[in-house]
Image (spheres, rainbow, N blue to C red):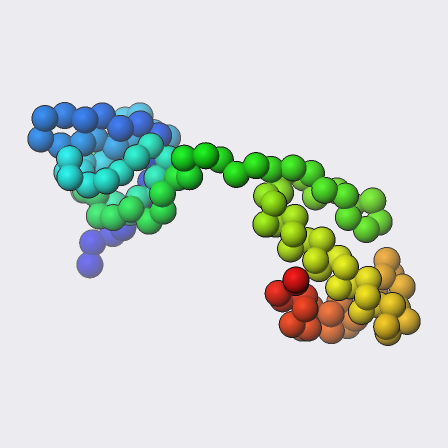
Length: 131
C-alpha cells in the first residue's frame, strides 16, 4: 500500500494540463488535475512519489472562506478562555453553568473539587452536551 500524507494548500499554480499545489515547503508540490476542486487553505491527502512531488488523492477538508470570529471569555475563578469561537464559548459557558448548579446541589466548593468529583461531573450528560 502506498504511503499517504496530508498537505495544507498555501499556493496553487495552474498550468495548461495540471495544477501544482504547494504547502509550507516551496520545494515540494502535489500534482492535481485541473478538474479537481482544490482551493488555497484546503487540507488534502496526497501520495508522495519523489523527494519533491506527490500525487493528489482527495480533499480532506475545505478552508472556510470567512474565518470564524474568535473572542476571549471570562469563566469562573477569573479563568480566561482566549481565542474561542462562538460555538466553543457556548459550550464552555454551558458547562460552567452546569457545574455551578451541580456543585450547589451536591454541596461542593466548585473551586476546590477532587479528582473523583471532577470525574463524576464529566460523566454527566449535561457536561458532555451542555445546553
